[in-house]
Image (cartoon, rainbow, N blue to C red; front, side, top):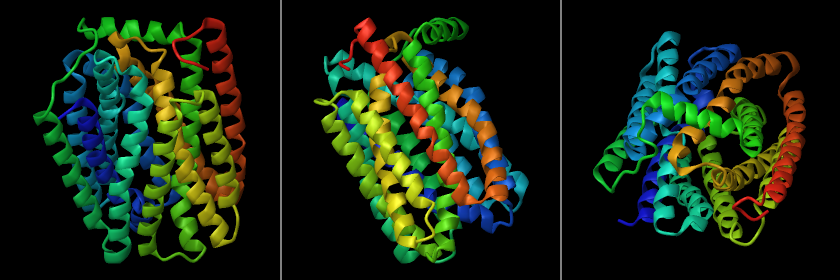
Length: 391
């Protein structure tokens, strides 16, 4: 199996595992009798664990192998989903969050770093954005099918979805171990590579800007996850119809990823990334409406913007990262954003309780403007330093 084909297959399988629970996670956890604040605490624990282990596991990926680290993360994710589904009490939900955080930390940046270096060896470095876009587009096909099945077959027994998700994640781990070669970064001692990665980050103003952009995205996504499922039901959508929203997610995220990957070969990355944040802004405003149709339009725009955002963000930020510390620095970017987001989880739950979902949506929409300003700063830095990538 060729490099690109393996990446697309394994990423699609992983995305299918995520798709089983994404559309129902908030509603499922709230159905266990927990409050929004407790829900925020669960997400905070997940993010805290992910943030404090993300950077060390990035260094681990560079040392022991990027693909092996990804497989281990997939295994942790699988176990966490099973615990979520079977947990009879709040304490076990916290345990599931810890396991999920450990899994996410190991997955973060490892498979992407593997792909970038493999394509670089084959002198196909310019195709990174294309493959990131294709991966999300292909993964969306699986999400679409799973979303339809949830809408057609599932009623109120949401627990089974978490068990299926766990099984798929574990299969992903097994498949990724059995096929294709691994690659590595700098194989020096972990503390040496960590110091090297931190220095690499500190000396790069664009990477600092990218970490802030990712932090803002995490904040926007947190608000979306907290609000869209309960608000959809409040506006008249049935619980089993949340699966159809997952199918919409698959369609529009897939379209966004596929076409932005194609466009990345011709259009400047700053234009594409700014466009994604403009669409995020529109989506949040639409979602604040009290009309179900406008709300659903906002959800669709959010899915489209997310599909556009990730391929460009990952391919553009990678241009500033040395191959020897690629997984470490990618994990460091995620660690910084996740660290801030630990606090956001509790604050968002509190803000929704005090001010209501409409006010929170409108307030968070303004953060899109901050991201656009940061993107311009990166573009200016690009033109000054004549970076590897076109601007």
